[in-house]
Image (cartoon, rainbow over all chains, first blue to last red; front, side):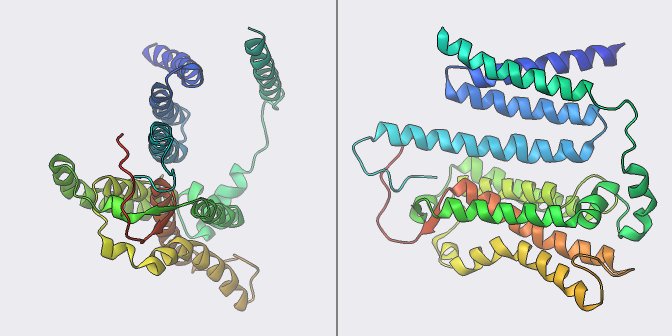
Length: 92
Length: 227
């Protein structure tokens, strides 16, 4: 019984997070929701009995893609705030 | 309002097609699981997922490693990024955390690589973890200028995974096999060799993707960009 409740909550949460990740007006909040979505997705892979995919999803899909999105966001904001200067060299 | 409706249409269409594809699946697909499990003893590893990735379908994984190399080549062709910006010392909390965290990350990634032969794990998971460690080191300013000057070493660690994979694949052809057809009894060691090189390349590639451009050594400091 408790397992079914858990799975249902997980499934609803996945759809909601995916929806909010693309619809949120604030890019930073979108990225955070994308990272949480990745973690929930890894949890669902575990529930589906695929621990290999869960590991890859947590490490690559959520962790590193999240880090790449965050650094891209930071550079976009830096480039926007220094619109006059040369955008060639920025802090990573 | 109209733009929203237009956005909804492809989404609904994709949802419909995917639902139909899911419902259209046969109830009891024949699958290849039985065949894969039957040959597991000869594959050199005890974990069926690793056997599929590195033995039965090694060609696919070879291309995946090649895609990672292509990605970093593409990123490096966009713009150079000055390495002087990462040499600054980090906040004390981050650097003391890193001092205790980095050895653990290194150990765990090696464990994931080794355990991949018997249980869930492998080069991609271990490489992603080690890549995360490199990202933390970049954030912590642990890459000193001297390290960046060894650009050839960095480049070598980017392509060594693909080179070893292709090298082993071609090497077994001298024994009379076909491309990536491991000789009997040596599959386990060859897979470990390929995975070790792939782990190095995957982790350095992911770290370099985070860095975001070809490291340039020219002196001028970058314009200050506040996060």
